[in-house]
Image 1: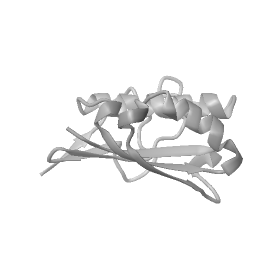
Image 2: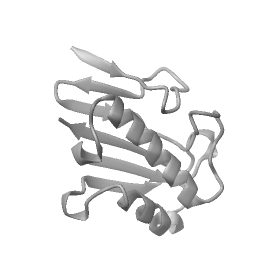
Image 3: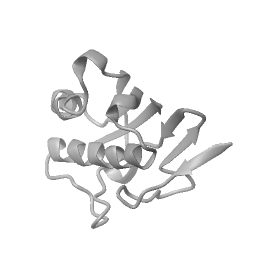
Image 4: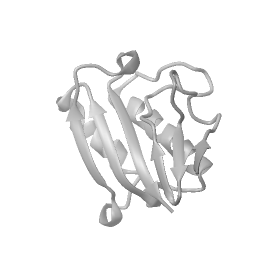
Length: 126
């Protein structure tokens, strides 16, 4: 059986999907974008602020599944402009211990939901 994970501390899904699904000991998260769950507004002041909101949203989803960033084994980062990689990486990296950081890919894409600049999804294991 799979368990649906939901928290009001992260944005509600904007389509037919869930914030995360727990199957056994493995959590599969949907991609998070920089929607502030308290206001429903996008955070786009800077690429750093946008990435920070994405990571805070992801933190809330992980916590709803009784996990932390230490449980994350794989991330996928989708960005609109590879020139933002350094700034995104700096914020993203502040959430992980470099020695135990998860596997990851970062890809530039043509477009993201709501025309945001970054979207991140994760896989975590208890």
